[in-house]
Length: 484
Ligand code: FAD
Image 1: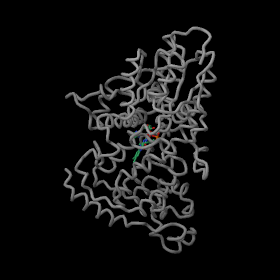
Image 2: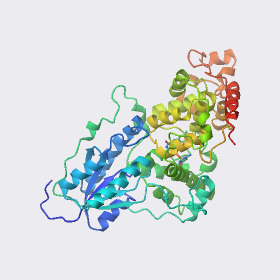
Image 3: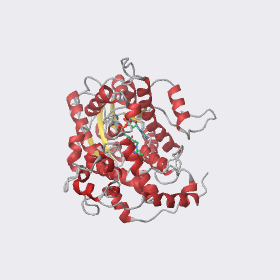
Image 4: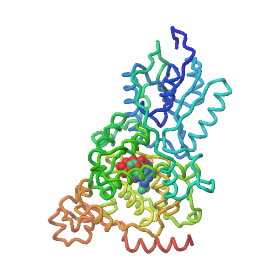
């Protein structure tokens, strides 16, 4: 790259899980300090030891990078895309651009931390200024500590400590313009990264559901605050209603900062109840708690937090696993959840708990199989929240739901989707079932099934296990572990 005017202050701005221009401390500081900026995204192959980027999130990432590149162009600059190890990409780009500094916002997944630490040391040795900033989560896992000076293992004291540490700073506005260079480094083409499905295009249903990118994130937040937040505390568990924010995929890639989400719940008009927005903040802080756990237990996605679960007699049941993945278990709320996941890349939180409990406790399949499937199919797949949540349901995690809390898929459905609105949306073959039997078609009289056009075992599966019996087997297996 050649630059016609001398520019001693040039910085590479390395975007990672912060694909945004607003509330981006690395970007704002580099600009404040007068740097010319070279925006960069690196496709780091197999960075994540827990497996490569899932297919659903790859779809999201493609669109998010496209949106980021367009926003940067509108502000006067360009995004450079490169593939390879971060060390080699940065080494080459520094040589090409004569950049004297690299700015980034910190990431908190263990492989990312290890890469960044080594990079910081190497680049500093080479005389390159390296500056890193907070922003992906609300706290710094190495700094927020219990009174005894250790890390947190229980959510409520964690929440109290985080909340007690004061409100997050107000988000920094996006810059109005960015310095334009005379020429930009060469970039790879986003389409060459092949992050979109081709045949079959399983992501068709994603397109009508989502708008990846920073603008989409802010739109989603504004709509939620306007209509969804009121009633959040009591209605957030009902998957047929619109009382959750669906911000998780935007947060997962940092298109919006958690501080900006928190900020949207400040200074609300009087007709908003405190209970609703505090409860929402508490959920947001579960994300931080998950990162806290991952930071202090980097093997969270691979190993039981509670080692007593290591001896659990998991079943090897590929057919049952497949039925679960495809939403063909014969339990409507489970099938609706798994099909929502496949069709839209998302699943409502209540239903995630139900399907996870079903996999682990009704099918006795290792929670790691579920974690892996979610990682591949969720647009919000997150190394911390996914692993921590699976261990929470399994009972093996920190501050987990006890193993003996086994969700009954029938009563859960009846309680949280009483009219079957959610089930009818994702399991259309049950559309005409009366509400009384929508969650238990196997108990419906033949005439009712006939009138609804349902033939069990043909148009909709019979249950692959008997929940009552499966529950007893799971409890016996658990009692054999002697977990306190
Ligand atoms: P809202 O209710 O609107 O909450 C706002 C934000 O708070 C969410 O966007 C999310 O960032 C955070 N949040 C809410 N609940 C939780 C929670 N229990 N744990 C951590 N953060 C939370 N969340 C992910 O972001 N990625 C995952 O890979 C993931 N895997 C999960 C796997 C299982 C088995 C379970 C039970 C939960 C998982 N969750 C995961 C947590 C939760 O289900 C989602 O964060 C939530 O459903 C996202 O929807 P929302 O944005 O509408 O949430």
